Image 1 (cartoon, rainbow, N blue to C red):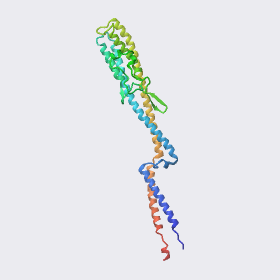
Image 2: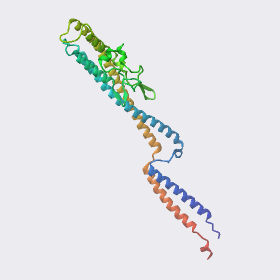
Image 3: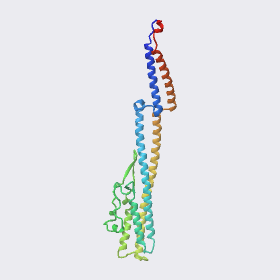
Length: 303
């Protein structure tokens, strides 16, 4: 009788190696939670995974950037409220018929206006347009404003607004410039100061007929400036709503992409655990079979 175990032994060895490989892969899946250690292990899904990862990075960047923008818009809203309070206080001041403290109140409103217009966020001046590295106001006192050839020279902002991309297809103006918001208001401050220093001034005690007539004219101008500030504040509020909606949209897309990548990359842990158990059993059986076959001999048959 002729007995050959070489082919059987070779087959058993291949079964053992295959079982060990499956055990290793199942163990890796359990430890990493992923179906494969690299993209080439995903086969036809690799391209979809790469596209989803790229989209996820882009969406996460938008969420981060738009959240920072939302914080800036909150700061701008506070600045607009300060401006609105300053102009409202100025309008109330001009309704008096006693000019004793009028210019003191005007200077307070001016100081409040300048501080609001020089508001900064993360080191950048929010009313300076694209020139965020410089203060948008060149003056800090009404006297300096009076020394200028034109009240508009009080502004050092850029003529172009700063803008940012909040989505692939949407670019948003971040804020109005100081000159857009308070150009008319600086004119009011300048004219009041000039009138106070002129032949019909100063405002001190009960107002004269000429002073009252002039103040009535400026009240109309203050109302126009007040409307200008509130219009800009309303635009800022609209930007806030738009950015908040954009953040919600990006977060929804981020959640979708996360689930998509999970379906593509993440392993079913229960199935992986079952596969590992089966692979361990297969390794034990294959090892035992290979051991028996490798120890086989013709000696018992020759005795």
